[in-house]
Image 1: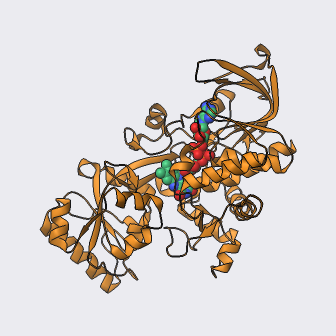
Image 2: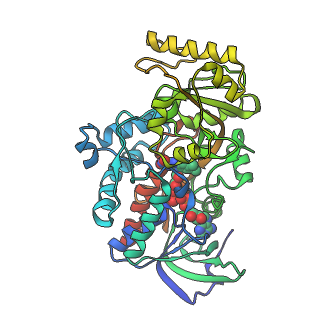
Length: 462
Ligand SMILES: Cc1cc2nc3c(=O)[nH]c(=O)nc-3n(C[C@H](O)[C@H](O)[C@H](O)COP(=O)(O)OP(=O)(O)OC[C@H]3O[C@@H](n4cnc5c(N)ncnc54)[C@H](O)[C@@H]3O)c2cc1C
């Protein structure tokens, strides 16, 4: 993982644009490049492109889309940008947030119209912090489908994707212009390739324990639930080049990963009227804030474990997600006809669990707010059979990274852009600020797809 002097390298082959990483960001960038008639080579370290994109629910927030309009959902880029900024406490750059919130809707419609990605909008629940139903997903609501469809579209559009090619080094001159890269093949062989422009789409540093300990110490040693190949090369190369970095402590955590099996349990289990208790059978937080900040909160509980408690109605909503269906098939979503059976199945103390459940139901009936600050107004009661899952907190991905402008150009600390270097998705600083609670659901794929598109367009123009 080095940045080496360009003068020392010769390149037998050269591509106009090289993209590092074939997740949502890299593949969207490739599609934008091909739409502009530009040749592009995507280098991917894995045998098959998956990335964190494949591990996600594949849900992308976008305002003012035709799917929202058809569903009668009023929304606008301004409203979306306001939600992002409110969740992140005003930390991200407001102009950047507006640009991304404005770009994403048309990009999703373009992916649907031009490349056949069959998006629809989720209207049966809203994620915390979103003032409109604006999460768009493909039919299976899985990131695996998203990355597969993007890859198929990119290949059909004439993108070359070279798998099992891990980029190790960049070659740059004194002005920060990238002349080429080196990549390693599975047999240990090294190859060098010249490029006219380079797009970093290799995500963040969640898979690098040393960088997590340095930048996100509260989750050091926590379960990492993202793609193991996200080792932080973009950050390390950027630092070596003297690029500006920002919000390196920012991240997306999740307080609802079924443990020990490791399956994401949709946060709809909580927002729709469920709650979490610790091993003492007691609630410990305002779960309605958001799943990201809940990761560290759950990890502070005894054994780092919580039980998410909900009912069959809520399970019916969560069942639209492939992950939840898998969790049910694996038998980790327990079912119990009453509190005594629930306590027996979960091994939680029955008296405490009963008291917690009664308290929550009384709060719902009164439409009241509890001592943690969670409002139970308009939350339907839980109706037996109860459902419960044993969960822990996990790190999903980092949100800090290289500072880019609206065209995804990597910037120096003085705000000037590098001549031909771009970053998108988890490689770039996102729009979540420096804290876990700054992550608004969907910020990950939002910046992957919107900045990937911006990077591809800009690199094609350059
Ligand atoms: C369990 C889970 C659920 C999530 N759910 C959602 C959701 O519903 N909505 C949402 O918006 N976000 C979600 N996220 C976050 C989202 O998945 C990421 O923000 C997004 O996928 C980032 O896309 P990317 O293209 O930047 O990175 P990735 O999809 O990780 O792609 C990066 C690619 O780069 C490759 N790579 C890395 N280093 C190199 C190298 N040196 N050389 C070559 N290739 C390299 C990797 O192998 C990988 O394929 C979730 C994350 C997780 C883990």
